[in-house]
Image (tube, rainbow, N blue to C red; front, top):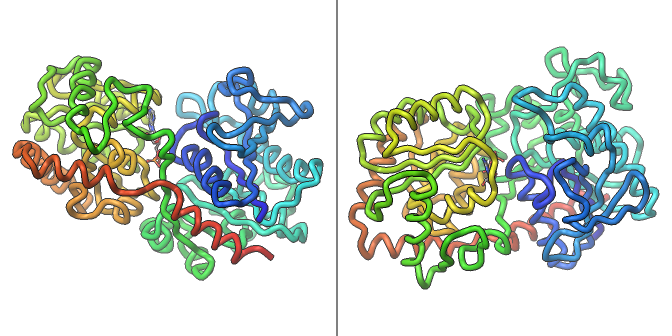
Length: 458
Ligand code: ADP
């Protein structure tokens, strides 16, 4: 089958979150299973064409490969819209005002590009609102190409003023509640949900959750109507990248057979974060976008109590200024217990996964979540709220789980985790070995995507 995978971010070229990890890994897994797959993405300023050995095909298209594979990645070259932008979607918390024009141009280029190269995919796999216009153009234009639209986060709907509707290349007949209208605006994400042949999201539980008012962000009705076309396939992670036995960013390599060597990473992490270098203190890591979704309000409510538990908290993240302020204040107040770095730093993230004893994800909702899967791989025990993909991937005995979205339930799970760490004997080592041996590589999920592509192929 010929599959065109379209994403606004792809590891290692550009990343703001889990979508980039998926886009960098799933196409490789599909190709390894014998499918013909290519990737299409914008080239941003931060994607250095020299470093990535990109070749220019014409002024609007360049090409490279996904590292460790033969999968070709085609880049949309547009200096004003992408090549000159410091960030992907927004600066300092403010969306670029021309995001609609930027991603309309991107979607239109995808469709003209496949004509230019004379390669007709069986399926176009679109991801999040940045690609939502593709299924709409395919269907309204009578194309024979099938489309799958993946939702990586229901909350990001791609909302724009209705006055911009004609700039999408579609007409006013789209401005109805059954199509792109959303509370007097237009939603590019909704266009994807309405027009794709199948809608997919990144875990089975989240696929059910988004069909409820609590998680559906106003589109649960539409999703319930389409429920026979809504699928959930859990994400994997790229085991070539996330591997403590070869990770070039960490202090000491280790595997399930020599878990003792993980300790050196912990001591190094404590040093880097200016915390007391003590092996016996439980260390909890967080690597996250600092957004309400990720549960920082309930963490804020529990933090004073957590500080009394004689544990350490290391946080790497960036996002909402209110959380920047909160964690900076906490660091000043409890310098021996909490240390924070505000920013996006892939190498440091890897050091946190390797050096922490626990990894905290108290999410309010979580489409899939990758942090818990990466933690498993690094022998770091996840502490998670039972929601979305966290519910599907972290089972009792593999991590510490709480259900109620409250500071007290979160605190209780951390107390249980800290008590377990204090035992620090055979049970501890046994659990680390068990989670390190769980398999969340892409193989089995990629097979499920292939089945889905076969179903929608016209
Ligand atoms: P989301 O896509 O909602 O942000 P996921 O758990 O699906 O959450 O994926 C997050 C990915 O981004 C993980 O690979 C995580 O390690 C990475 N990440 C998040 N914040 C940072 C940061 N500040 N620095 C480096 N990596 C980060």
